[in-house]
Length: 355
Ligand code: SF4
Image (cartoon, rainbow, N blue to C red; front, side, top):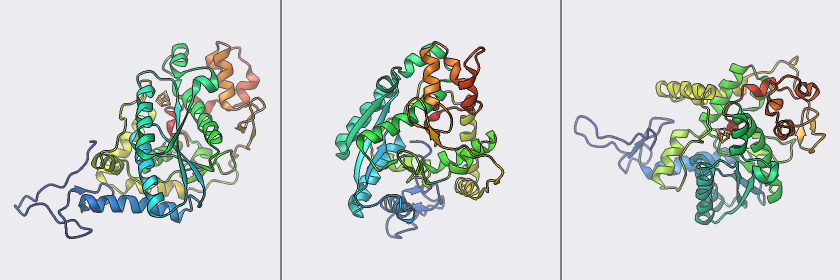
């Protein structure tokens, strides 16, 4: 388990402390978010009830909603599926929950993690829908990487995943998509958007619900949930999840931002919540030009340009000019290149966190 802090006996021989919540049982761990010494039972309760409060206070769901949980088989989405199922029963949310997975076609990574999601389908009794890049776009990530190498693979993957999730959600006829993005992910994205000067993304990356003007709204019930607590919860509950990194992960710029946030958290656990708060409180100057939403002339997907990003990238792949979509080749269709604001996409790393 990643840095789970299990409560240790006191040096003066006084044994393990009492749980600071119930004051009855022995503390079993130190909560990463608050540093409280707490027993397992109280940890489960505070962890789940904090998420319940976030859901209720932000009115994330309505009774009768059909909700797809973006499921990768990783710790975040597995804990999300488990906790949402529990809360749905306990608090009578009245939700119809589904699992929605994307098969990017990454041998040795996604095929294995999908096996985990298939087990989760049975363990939690939730129907699973899998959409694949091969079916939707005619390409797997393995094939894309073979053609383009390991430099801009995540740009393709992130753009394709975004649409794939929307298309899967439409097939399931759901009202909303819930994703497992946690507080660390959001703090990291705030930081990256500041570093890149990406005002459009900065203004929306802290929103708990996004895409209300698009095909399927998305929400993040773990917006204030610390990654370390998710790991602890999954570990103590013995949840079945997959923990291997993508074999094509570049881990460059985003990796540095992640490490920086982890360092800050070590010194001051509140730093994660404070970065999110700072992101929320940014005021975007009214003179900053924001992209206007339209639809792609080619596939009808939402786009602020003539063609959506996926269509531009796909055109490049199909023409054997993969750099078309990332704006680096010479003699390309400048119309398409310029009309799609590709400067932004060149610098993107793992698209799994592209809110
Ligand atoms: Fe796709 Fe993420 Fe792997 Fe990049 S690291 S190829 S975005 S799954």
